Amino acid sequence: MSQLAVAEEVEPLFRARDLGYSYPSGLRAVSDVDLDIRPGEVVSVVGPSGCGKSTLLSLVADLAQPTQGSITWNEEALPAAGRGQRLSMVFQRDTVFPWRTVSKNLQFGMENSGVPRTEREARVEELLRLGKLEGFAKSYPGALSGGMRRRLALLIGLSVDPGVLLLDEPFSALDEPTRIELLVDVLRLVYEAKVSVLLVTHDLGEAVSVSDRVIVLTKRPGTVRKIVPIPFGHDRDLRTIRETPEYAELYSELWHELWSEIGS
Amino acid sequence: MAATARVDDVPGGTPAGTTTESLASLTPGEAGAALGTTPSEQQAVRDIARRKARRTVVVRSIQIIIVILLILGWQFLPGVPGIQGPFPWLNTFFISSPTLVAQQLGYLATGAQGATQIWGPFAQTILTALAGTLSAMVVGTIAGIAVSNWRMLADVTRPFLVVVNAVPKVAIIPIIILIVHDAVAAAIVTSFISVFFLAFYNAAEGASSVPREMIQNAELLGAGKLRVMLRVRSPYAIGWTLAALPNAIAFGLTATVTAEIILGGSGLGYQMLLALNNSNSSLLLAIVLIVAIVGVALVLGATALRRVILPWWESSQGA
Image (tube, rainbow over all chains, first blue to last red; front, side, top):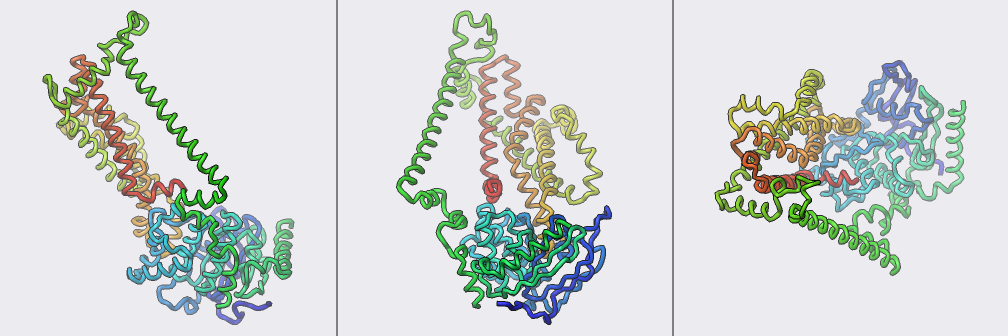
């Protein structure tokens, strides 16, 4: 059971060193964070509310510039397919374009990088099959259920062959059964695409279920309190691991870390 | 890959027939059938449908009865002896009567009894309202998107727009006629100005209310500044503007008819002015009825047009 999905010697996709961010007001949101993600690795970030989890994602996504430290990308470790990007992101909020059909939504990123139409359409078909959305290519997102829209957002993220997929609490608005179903799909999708994932979540169960490592942040300004390896490997079964003693142990370890942080 | 097979084993991952997802793909009827599997449940579903249908019949019947009562009252109340004591306006001279109005409508349609045939002014008013409204929609939308994209432009123009928007459009009709010298052109300009601000504010509001995350996501997916404006902000803004199309066309028609009444010379508004000058209430009411029908037809047309141009809008509003 105890195995690492990605060997520690593998060169990381990016290295963040001493990463920090302060708002113009001087309020420090994130401070001195070191973070590496290796190809194919799933890493979760948990922490007390307001600890800068989402800010950390923004820094990695280059949506905000770090006021301290830096991120170094290892371009050679990125997908070699040529059209691949460093990263894409699934936001907490719905970012699917309501005026584009499902197929056109999936093509947006590829249009931007000039992928020819026939190639785009072939890729869309593949993505729809992966995401179990066949038959919805011509539907508008408004006609999809909440869970399907989230899956579409995820497929859009995968459509550009990212090195890292950033997930900012992407399933927090969904009910439990839909969330579990989606998590199963997400894992299948990211394992198949061999994409790395950086997941921000407040759900410790979600973090243990899907991750290879869980990073626990401290209260604001968020910095790494502890890194907990999750040794379930990539042939884990989401249904059964929740019933194993190892899962319970890891969950309570994270629970303990988080609550001693909140209580401190 | 073993991992894939194992992950797929989870019950939620299999295409079970009762997940929310698969229900969403069914039509409401099918979903109802899938939910109501036992005979008693199906009976309950049928009962709800029957109760709804019965309610609709009751509502429609009451509406029809109200219309009949209004028409009967309009026709016969002025004939009730002594009623003009407390209600002097219940007089055929002021409010005419359904039969007289119907007669006038007949004259207007055929040009009999020396009446002006109404089709010319009818078409004139519709075309004027459409020309003013549609051109204002296009220009207003473009201006709104432009302003929301350039902060500088928005800051510079804001006070002027507030002032111009606050001026009652009807008040500037005389100035417009001085400038353009032509009644039809002046009516078009009036409806243009009335609708322009509606379109402009909707577009500006729409373009600047695109969720920040949607734009960030587009950028992460490789879209540059121009692409974000053309493919993200613009569709969003156009959605907002076209959503207001039925309102805009109603504004445009009001402005057009008002301009015609003030300026004279063309359209249904001018016919109303003539009827008023002759104190012909039957003719006046007949034309008002025509204007009302034009208004309803234009709003319904605009709603249908919106459905064609924006197939995604209604469904995204329902979500």
